[in-house]
Image (spheres, rainbow, N blue to C red):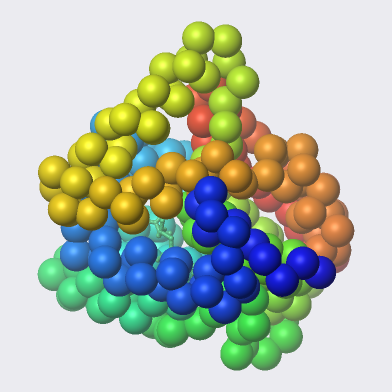
Length: 243
Ligand code: SAM
């Protein structure tokens, strides 16, 4: 395994990548939610609704929302009666999430600092594992997928939503322009942090294409791995089952 990995477009050591991803999210934590709205034109809310409809959380289920950040996806799932553990490598993101949950009077949530690559949970602890806009930031993605498989019960569902570079003629150019110019600009204006938002754009560009990621999900032991593109392929919902 190569010792150098990409942090956006830069090559860095594995430890350095994990550390710098940590810095990015500590730096954006307080502005993360407003930035999501600005960068996606509010679309992230619809994507997350659609995602949770696919997951179909049920009352009494235990779900691990990995890289759960400030809790957006977890909130939607507890509202449907599931118990959700929000796990993230970044304590600052979780702190913002806890405050938001309290302000909304939500219960059924627990919060835990965890690295997706090496979870502290026992085997077969959850009915579903979700990870939204998180896995592209993980240094060792195959390790994270193996861990997802390990902590799921038999019959457990794996669901991941991630950006994907779109191939749609015309739309791809439009997206590239938006991503290269507007996102870092909004990052500078609103969060005074152009660098972090440039990293986010570069990390999206470098994330494996849906067929490649689908194979990674299968290789981790999941069956019926599927990739469902949304909105011209800008975002893809990946899924798989543990049997
Ligand atoms: N899922 C949330 C959402 O959609 O609003 C947050 C997504 S945010 C773009 C990505 C999150 O991944 C950050 O909170 C970051 O701390 C987390 N993350 C990055 N690397 C991680 C790792 N190795 N293990 C766990 N979380 C990680």
